[in-house]
Length: 328
Image (cartoon, rainbow, N blue to C red; front, side):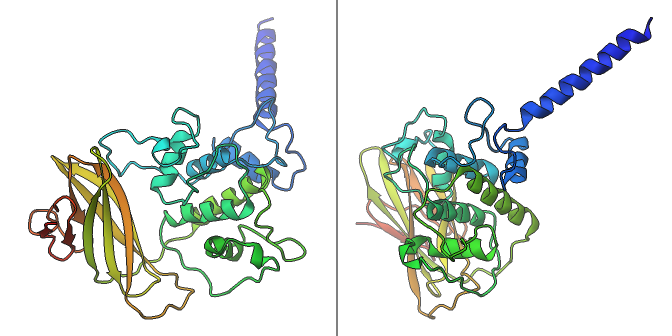
């Protein structure tokens, strides 16, 4: 008689487990070519369904959903930036909402350089070329990776936004993205939710399984200038003379010490698969700080202890090699 309750409990637990397994999986991804990758992302909490337990894999991906899944999937954050006041999504994107479910992800994407169009709307459909570009930009935040020297021919190359071509090429080389049977990429076609999940899954796998390459940072001359936006905001621009156009310039973080805003920058490595003209090139990158703060430049090879990286005056500039203020 005592064994009966144990049997009932065991059967109940088995039933609950079975139900939880069926509830966990989306009800409309069965037989979808990307089913296993969608399920894997769901189990990690990276993607969610729309309603009624459905993922809608063939539905069009919105910008809000696309940016959110990239940020979450690749673990992007802005933990290395200290803000005087909380950033708002409307500081950069007037068509978005500050209190929306996607706003935090968009802010993180903006400060990680995902290159989101300033006029974007949350419900805009994200095209294949746009998702490819934002996804590859997110990959680059995880380190410098080596790519094989090849160029994938697209029959519809003329339809591709030239600014997105490099990102598309890299995803094709990595076999994260693919062409159709006619060797078309279909750049202006809205990407489906299922395909975007598959690309994201493969991008995560690439980052996790591929060690970044290391390359010494070249000696660089930096210059810092300011521009008054209004009574509360100052625009700070860092300019550097780089060995050739393949190098980039990035603001990695902003820290605050008293009334000083210490702006940390680094040089982005050139694409090893490309050949660049050996011409010294000027690159610039900008950020915005509270007008009450004094901007300080912190770059490789520099310190901010008072010997270099001096604050600059309003409307002036400072050399990255000495950091002495220049008035006017």
